[in-house]
Length: 604
Image (tube, rainbow, N blue to C red):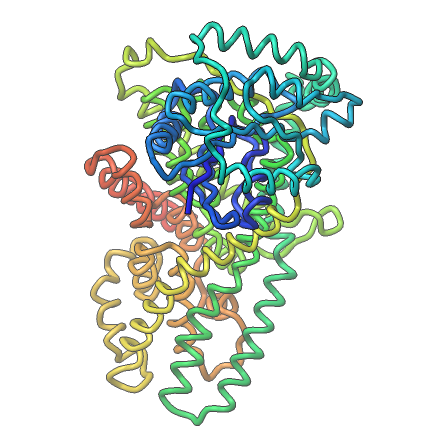
């Protein structure tokens, strides 16, 4: 089996081409640095490897440095038979700068090269034709026009690729290597000869940008989009959450009625459906969050948002590129911290990584949703489009963002400003506005739900079982006399100033493994205590128990700030290379979270 490597610049449709060629589904995004690891898939009897996108073989960021290093390794690998270089037909000059560099590198290593002229449908839409036969002669390599989105020329390209692997020596470039200046001049000359005029492609894009990037309306539109993003997490997901809750309740009733009374029945009802089931209810919110962020990525707005945010973020010692990891952090902090590699400045990259844990990730969603359902009434506005619970969601996310910015200012003042004298200017390519490709987007939504369940499910199951065992014995379900009550009462003095009893203390402690465990732990605890009462839902149980408003708000703020994720701490250690920074953030954010919770419990 031989390797075919796929390379290209960001925003050129490379990852979508990889998906279509292999049948695999990989995240496709419209900003640099999203593909930070190699993806491979089967293509006939061979392996197609998708490399991270990069603009040049000379790195400008840590992420590009990694991508270039992997490309050089692949060129040295004897298993690599062919190089496929993906070109954006709508932006031929910038694509060819990288393409010519790759062609020359492949020639040095005697590797065959084929150019995939992608997005040809958009060029044809403007009535422009590209003479691929003549372009092939000028490049000294085969060129195939195709569209990964509309599938134009895809089958022909796939078959030609499989044939080319068997005769890769026939596809070694027929030109000599060129100096850097010659590459720039050649790419410009070829673009003028074959490419579509930039003003034709950019005409529509500029009209939209004149509105979305307007100095007055651009910021307001951005704030409105962000508000709708967080509002949708609660409003749009509610019907799905209700459906999951009803299905779980029916399943619990059927299973419980089929089992005899006793320990097994109690375990299934309280540990499984009470613990794990309480967590599954919130999976629809993860799906809605992924869907909205996916829309922003695929349409091209996300890069515009980074541009809008650059000036305000610079006041806090950050870059416009920090916006992308920040927004990604609302899904999961781990890939967001890795995405910070695209920030050229070492100091801004470090500050961004250190403040990403303050973004409210998807693991916090179940905690927020539960506490909001307990504390905030479901008051509707604008015919149900906006509700008070959704506004509270937005406020919690906003508090996390503001806290991150304030911490950034503090970190910025603590670092040596002279280190960034050689910082490069902020440069960001604005991709063409495009409609999303729905199949990858839908698959991404389903994948995010599966990954969330696979990552959190086993942990929640184990924690729920341990909590149930500790709470059931030695008195067969007498919670107040159980081992868990003894442990909880021992640690209760720590959480008593926060207005929380031992049950919340136990749930907080076990959630340091993963924040979402908090819901499953409380589900197990309250499920056991209220097994004989006719109360549906964990939120109803907590409301009946009487959680004070100040304590509840303090608990929400605690989860906004506290770094309760061992995996995030490990990722911070790996990316920063410092154990001191990783555990220092863990302790610092934990102390700040405790203080905020204490203030709320004391004065609200």
